[in-house]
Image (tube, rainbow, N blue to C red; front, side, top):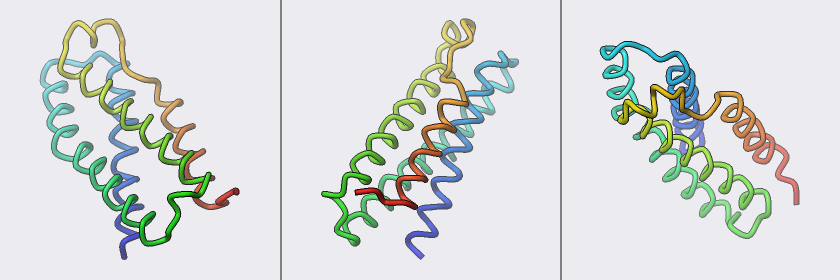
Length: 124
C-alpha cells in the first residue's frame, strides 16, 4: 500500500510540474495564472511532500540508503523538486512569466524516465 501511495504521489507531482512548465511557456491570462497557482499550492506541492515522505519511508524499510541507484534517484528527485520551486516562483512573479521562464517539460520527463529506470533496474 505504501508503494502504491508513493507511485500515485509521484504521478500527481510529475504531472503538476509538467503542466506548470507547459503553462509558463504559453503565457496565459491572469485568471488562468491564479488557477494554476492554486493547483500548484493545493495539489502539486502536497504531492511533492508525499513523494519525499513516502519515498524516504520506503528507502528506510528496504535498507537502501547505501545503494548507488537510490543515491542517484534522490539526486534526480531533488532536481525535480528544485524545478518545481523555480516554476512556482515564476507563477508568483509576473516579470519572470513574461520572459517565458519555466523549466522545459522535456527535461522533467527525461529526469523522471531516468528515476523510474533506476528504481526498476536497481543497478549496483
